[in-house]
Image (cartoon, rainbow, N blue to C red; front, side, top):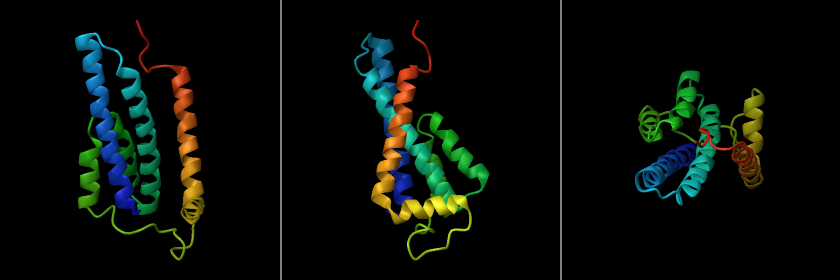
Length: 151
């Protein structure tokens, strides 16, 4: 999977889960039906964290300027903003190419590159570790409760 494919997939998934969350909130506050909110909220939270992790990884791989990478992560808090951001970086060629640190690619020059090389040389194990890390953060956030307290 290329950086473009991975980033595009997560940007789209993040926008879809925004739609689900907003629909659940309309059901909750417009129709007094809270049954969808925990599901949509949890799904959106998990995909949001996954999008942020993927954005950081693609940012490092593609050597985006700091402004672009920070904007990519920050725009996830605005409903559907990941789609125009993805289109913008793709149109500017910032998603072109493969994984720089993949086997046979560039030699790691710094700690971030070394981490990327490790991930790309062991993709299945790395994907599992990333999923577990996102799940742990997600569970901690669930334990802490919703961002806006009830009442």
